Length: 123
Image 1 (tube, rainbow, N blue to C red):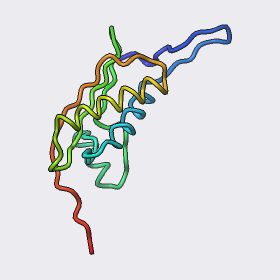
Image 2: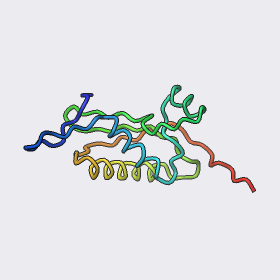
Image 3: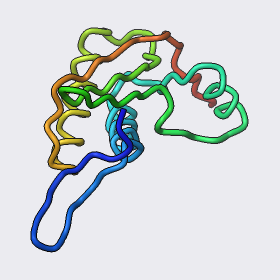
Image 4: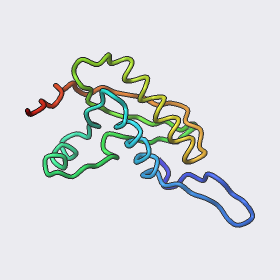
């Protein structure tokens, strides 16, 4: 993965976008999809979550070799249709990244790492 993605060059200079920005946009878009409990970030991400730190970049990998590929790992709420949630994540992430950066997203890969029961409502 290169350090910066050159998006636009003009007479004033150029605009470069750090991969972390694409990760953050993707994380926000994915977390807003119904049925997504959290992004899955492995042991370090889980420890941060236990400590109350929210990291919207965890579980997201951005790769730009021949094409822009965004790979997300998510945990889905029990009872939701996983293929529908996956497709919605793909659409939301692609739309958000393309509209905010002007880059063309070629692939959005969604990996479901787990399923959790919804939080119980206290009366």
